[in-house]
Image (cartoon, rainbow, N blue to C red; front, side, top):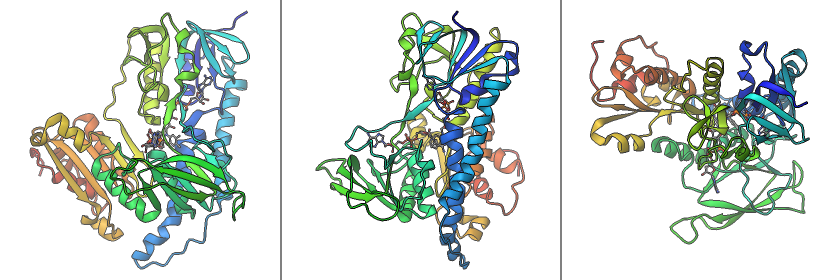
Amino acid sequence: MTPHFDLAIIGSGSGNSMITPFWDDRRVAIIDSGVFGGTCLNRGCIPTKMFAYPSQLAASAAKASRLGVDLEAHGARWREIRDRIFTRIDAISDGGRRYRDEELDNTTLVDEEVRFTGPKQLTTAGGAVIEADNIVVAAGSRPVLPVVPGIDLPQVHTSDTVMRVDELPEKIIVVGGGFIAAEFASIFSGLGSEVVQVNRSPRLLRSHDDTISERFTELAARQWDLRTGAVLSSIEPLTDGGSGTGQRVRVNFTAAYGDQASATSDFSEDANLVLIAQGRTPNTDRLNVAAASEGGLDVREDGTLATDSFGRLLSAGQPVPGLWGIGDVVNSWQLKHVANHEQRVVAHNLEHPDDLRSMELTPVPSAVFSRPQIATAGLTEAEALALYGADRISVKVQDYGAVAYGWAMEDDHGLVKLIAERDTGLIVGAHLLGEDASNLIQPLIQAMSFGLDAHTMARGQYWIHPALAEVVENALLGLEVPVSGHL
Ligand SMILES: Cc1cc2nc3c(=O)[nH]c(=O)nc-3n(C[C@H](O)[C@H](O)[C@H](O)COP(=O)(O)OP(=O)(O)OC[C@H]3O[C@@H](n4cnc5c(N)ncnc54)[C@H](O)[C@@H]3O)c2cc1C
Ligand SMILES: NC(=O)c1ccc[n+]([C@@H]2O[C@H](COP(=O)([O-])OP(=O)(O)OC[C@H]3O[C@@H](n4cnc5c(N)ncnc54)[C@H](O)[C@@H]3O)[C@@H](O)[C@H]2O)c1
């Protein structure tokens, strides 16, 4: 007999948190053909930050000498760092898997690839059919690999595998200029690898505000070998072996803009390891969504599945009863805190069909845990200019180096850039680059989320003196916006 569930969830990342106490007396299938716990836990947010922190410590030696302190980094014990990180992570993944598989009576773990074979019907790779009244698609995304000769060589990695290699690579080539490339170039250069980063466009982190993107590109070029205006064309094994960690590869790049104004010409670099970081694609194509409803599910141009604001999957623009979507497979933010919010909303909506709630949180913030860190929320200056026009916004760039704690740090690069509506003082964009940017931005996210205007935020509370947060206070005070009653 075909097993029938009240709820089936495809994906054990954010999908695993869908199983609230409401389901205790109901039958739930949690389906994942990969490692239990999904991307963030096993190969995403968490291990990367666990590598970023020791890397930052190693890199602090150079910073310290500017302040008259002689520190020396004697190298990083890669295997020890790797094993500390994954001993912890693998135990969490194994524990979560065991809990769902063995300890709970109401949940069934299906560790196979599934695809839709009918409305509310899934079939596993092994041919087992599963039916469920409700299906939540939380199938995530995966790295995009360019189709070039040599891409299958064992020296070529993505973020899925690079954190588990046996040796710290002597030399690594990072291909790409987004979040993942920025974080791994920072991690490996901090730990002592020679890093060459190659990006197609002249600027790194191009989706960020121009001031941030320009400053980060400049700082990256000071810390590792940055080449821009080039694309990967092929990778070939080198027969002479090379020193250090196994056989090296030769990585060939072509000038991205042909004969045009680019200063770059074709070039090759040898390395022990190549990291491809050219974006992630939603796992929609693994699901056979054409069979999920009459007429199939709606797929957006970027490959994500379309949902309404309640998280219901759509077919011809209409919600399909019982089908829901969360996370990277439905939104292009590809951020864990966004997936978590969507999960909470859909969990509520499944439990309360007569009181549906919308995904409502704005703005969506993010941080790049690179060296230096970057944090952002809301509109870039270019977006604000296009939306409001120059005379309706005020922009302030405040350097870390201009506040007391910045003097203590002898900071020469950190900045806070704020964009606000001139007539209301509401903050519409916040962009930070520098020490602890991922934490410093949080009060700005709070103000933007709750509609607090810039002057009230600056003068309606104490700012601890002389904490680094004064850089945010000063940026707020530098905006040309209405003055509140606070002194
Ligand atoms: C290197 C890296 C660093 C990151 N750092 C951060 C960060 O610092 N902060 C942040 O907010 N975000 C970060 N992210 C993004 C974050 O990890 C993702 O947004 C988040 O994990 C997405 O969760 P999800 O539940 O949508 O999908 P996932 O966690 O990817 O879960 C999807 C699961 O579905 C399974 N699956 C897919 N298709 C099928 C199928 N057909 N059958 C069976 N199983 C299937 C997969 O095996 C997978 O386990 C990072 C990502 C990467 C790659
Ligand atoms: N700290 C974080 O929150 C964090 C960290 C890592 C990843 N993530 C999430 O994962 C997503 C994926 O990260 P990512 O760095 O792979 O993607 P990304 O979109 O941030 O960057 C992709 C890079 O690849 C380049 N690229 C794309 N196609 C190319 C092509 N054909 N040829 C040459 N270059 C090309 C782009 O120009 C860009 O520089 C991010 O968008 C982010 O949402 C978040």
